[in-house]
Amino acid sequence: MTDIKTLIAEAKAAREKAYVPYSKFKVGAALLSEDGQIFHGCNIENAAYSMCNCAERTALFNAYSDGVTQFTAIAIVADTEGPVSPCGACRQVMSELCRPSTKVICTNLHGDVSEWTVKDILPGAFSGADLHD
Ligand SMILES: O=c1ccn([C@H]2C[C@H](O)[C@@H](CO)O2)c(=O)[nH]1
Ligand SMILES: [Zn+2]
Image 1 (cartoon, rainbow, N blue to C red):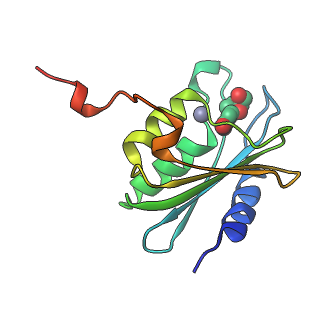
Image 2 (image 1 turned 60 degrees about the vertical axis):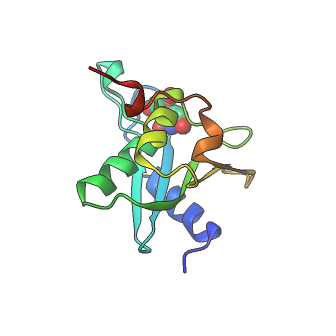
């Protein structure tokens, strides 16, 4: 069984693959599926800045692309002073692509850790239920 320490180590390894010529700010994510697989993500930037993709979304899109959609936890790591804080776009995407109970483990290179759930990190998230014809 994958523990939190292992998932954080996997996120750190993913971080090394970040493509960040513009911000130089490397982020890594490791997403644990219900069936025990780990999907990795790093941030991938672009000269057209709005096309940058965060590590969290890379990991989620990676898993969905492989047909895996049920997750118990995601670990996210960056070289921040405190635990890294996922951006609003990623909170929105996690709120739709993860279960409300999926753990969000935020950490940094100093070993500070804060643990949340997907439902904690975006109160009042917009959802498919808000759409109507
Ligand atoms: O939680 C976060 C916060 C930021 N970034 C990326 C986006 C961009 O490439 C760089 C600077 O914002 O860090 C992530 O991947 N995840
Ligand atoms: Zn983000």
